[in-house]
Image (cartoon, rainbow, N blue to C red; front, side):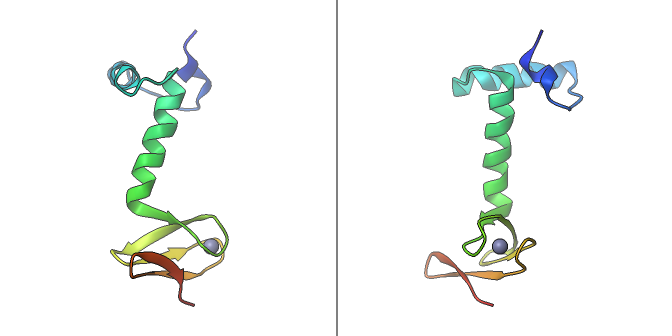
Length: 85
Ligand SMILES: [Zn+2]
């Protein structure tokens, strides 16, 4: 009946209402698209794309991140994320 029901998440009625509001605000086609968007936006604050393997690397500091996939240490050098070892 609802697109969000295909997700393996238990959302409260209040959360579903908020997602519906966000869906309108963002102009997205369905609730699932809203969740995908929110996850990506939130991830940008805590992770970067690993330049070495393409997986997500969790930021450990303002200018440093560590990739759990290839174990690279990535550092922000002059505005560019670079594998440092
Ligand atoms: Zn990596």
